[in-house]
Image (cartoon, rainbow, N blue to C red; front, side):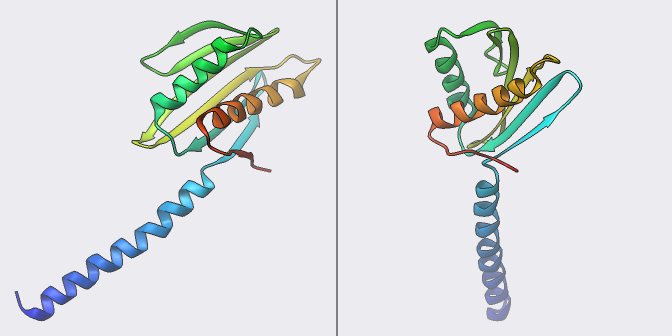
Length: 142
């Protein structure tokens, strides 16, 4: 390998590493936006945060068990899934691992015809509580 070939390889590696850093940082910044949507039977909210899945799931369980207004109906610790009720609303929460330090939280809350906005607020509020417990600031994407 000539000196020019070595120099070219060195420059290419440097260029690739410089280009990948800002893209990664931008993804994490965008990842903290809570997206919400409505289906015919439930409201769904989701967010991607930079935290380990087991840590996020532990924060969910700590939040649910420390507040008497929550009643856990079922949970699957292997799949990081929990279903609980708040008053008359049933809520399911799934924590998925996207990478070592990146997790996705998905919340589905059923809604009644007479109080459809409350369920949406409940799904978003659940994510905000978990983000706060983990120490990550999440905001609603408008």
